[in-house]
Amino acid sequence: MSESEAVVGRDAVRAPFSQGMMRAAEHHPELVLLTADLGKYTDTADFSQRYPDRYFNVGMAEQAMVMAAAGLSKVGKVAYCTTYGTFATRRAYDFLAIACAHSNERVKMFAGNPALQSGYGGTHQANEDLALMRAIPGMTVLDPCDATEMMQIAEQAADWPGTMYCRLLRANVPVVFDPATHKLEVGRGHVVWGDGDIGFVSTGSMTERVFDAVAQLERQGVGASIFHTASLKPFDHAGLVEFAGSVKRLVVCENHVASGGLASLVIESLHDAGLQRPVLKIAIPDTFTSCGSHAFLLDRYGLSTDRIVTRVGSWLEAA
Image (cartoon, rainbow, N blue to C red; front, side, top):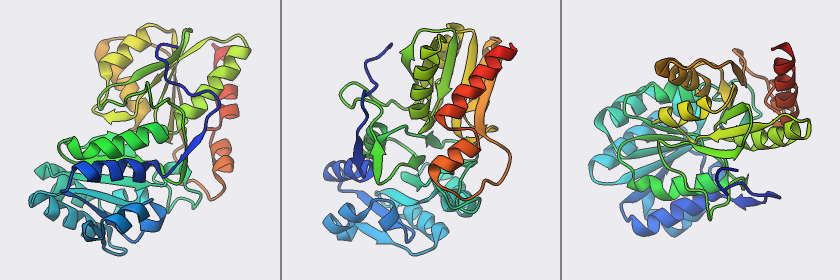
């Protein structure tokens, strides 16, 4: 490995978002938390009990929540917001763009149930949220992999300028990266595994599955490296190009539609650098996805570990 970051025999952490936010609140008396009637499902209970005067449930009104957050920012607050990704993006997009990002307000949107983390079908699966958010000027866009990154983002976001959109990992979240050695930096990716001709590029929860897929491939005699980034905007174009230059092929894995997210960023980076590499995109297809368990949805849409290994094997055989 290039960095001693990965955890062997992964454990899980309860409510890492809440833990990180509570640490931030201790040092930032200006931090307030708003939710749109989803506090129970976005790990806000600890905050609401300790800081009842800094907690606001606006009800099922995401646009109103974002406008209230923008107003609180204008009077010196740092406003953390929680809801589901579908409601943050599809219902409150204009409000995040104009009321928040346009004015560089300190509003931090934490969006739960990202893409196929939700089993509730197309109405609740924000499969296109990263593309929408990274199109907004000045918006920071993050897709954390695990409890380590989720906790670090929640703890540090109050110190970062401007408006942020971050996918929220809630409840019991796996620990993929060792918190003692892995440090998330906005705008920087990490080479977190290996030495091989195939380079995996991944973000968010897909990085855990990529680790497992690479382990299977290496048992089959296929060497691979992994470039992980939680930061989609700003994106580490230079780091990605350097990584791509060290391998012969790239496999991009994301819990998101294949257009506008990580794969698009990788292809843009290669194009701008004048570097050509074959690219296999493993992502959600252009469809409204169905209801089902997490494991079922990952396998159905090609994002499970076994499906990744099969796709890569077939791709290499066809080369």
